[in-house]
Length: 287
Image 1: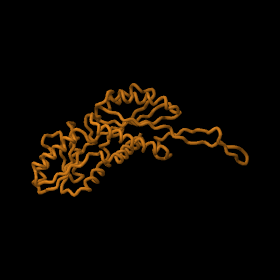
Image 2: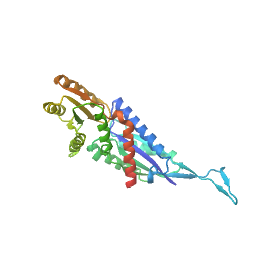
Image 3: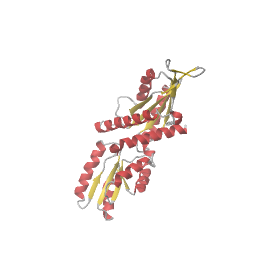
Image 4: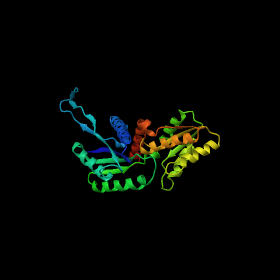
């Protein structure tokens, strides 16, 4: 009997259709990539499970005997998009439903190995407390059929820095602001500040009143006139709309400045899927 591999991409959740669509698209990219690599014997190391199937009609004769050809067929790999908020079911209920619905199709498996990937940029309360709590509930209820494990969150992957840097390099700005949501959890904002420094940018936090305006004023005082703003948010939605409106107002307030607001990570869904793949594989090799 074999182990069925399954992956749950956990998003924050949103009522905004753009965010919902982007989450589905990112999940589809990940599904395509993980299923494609499942056809490569060495692609996923210990994570890859193969089922030996002996075709009843395919035989080959040798000089002294006949030998049956054995085919290698990969077991299915299942992928789910799940949501911490803005969903009719709780996260643990979504996970349980996913596993229960997959069991009829898992004819080659005796147990399901489910990898939970938090698709969050910041290691805030949701990542550190809420998701592990929901996963623990699901594990308790699925203990007889499923083993669950969690990867680090998406924001922990340094590949994000490369994606942001490439986007910044495409625009002729004199200075950059990395605008993140911010978190009340200790250390999270410091991590964003470190990332901004690594990118040659200055940090700002949307959750801090006048945070963006303060940084723009500081850069203008230093003589910068063309200022780029990268919204460190996963997908477009209500907050990024509010940011765009604020930037428009600030552009009118500082007419001597050129303020350019980029997209959040909507433009890089295939690249994000690669990073999620890497997180999944790194966790598998470490276990």
